[in-house]
Image (cartoon, rainbow, N blue to C red; front, side, top):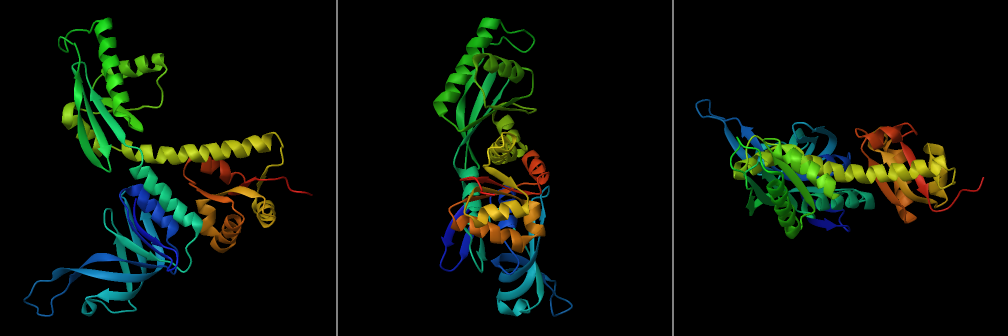
Length: 347
């Protein structure tokens, strides 16, 4: 997510979504009644029967009534009432319109009130796509090619050659270990936040085993049909990069649920769940971390948002948990809302 500007006085956001996860985050931030503005294409019918219809670029603003996000196709459609159109002659103000919020195109969101947790969600999306560079390594017995992914641009970083005498021959154990050591050394020198190893054969599996024996953890593994630059670009088209972004969020959500369950299991008094108990904790200023299932937020928006606002006013942190992942499924079992407390409640 690229954040172009955040104007808290005007409650105005300008962002550029860069991947499907960014669209998912925007779906959670945009609310009914917000004004969403951006460029869109429209096919305009010709007035003259003999002329062909033409496609024109319009700048439009619509007051949101409904959002429709298709995760698998990566599409976020905003539906609502048209309040602005330029050029004005192509669309009628007050008509119902649908615009698609597209990847790599700027969009403006004018809100009635801009909440801290909404800004934090966008900041997290920005960090997920820009902070830690990802190192991609595709290998077989003969060579390992390196590419550094920087803001969705692949920068070639050279290769390490193996000492294989050809794919018909089995590598000697000593030469294979030397090859793997050189790969690991080069990977460490590049200093990427995340490393993905991939390849078409069994060499990556042997490397994985060797790394585990060395105690090197945290790398991801995938399969490609090719090596070299072709293999690196093939890896870019796979879903492994989306998985990296999602995994970081899941790790945070799992940590929060683990802390919640630990407090509940030990009966420490520093955890509450269920709407009424959480509401009491929030009203007393006791909520340090408020965990809200996104599905519950959409079903009971007014009630839940009031708790989220009150939590932030008392310096608590709001976390919106994805209902589709395992941490969200656990939270759903506790009514979809829970809180980790600063202090125990008095009964």
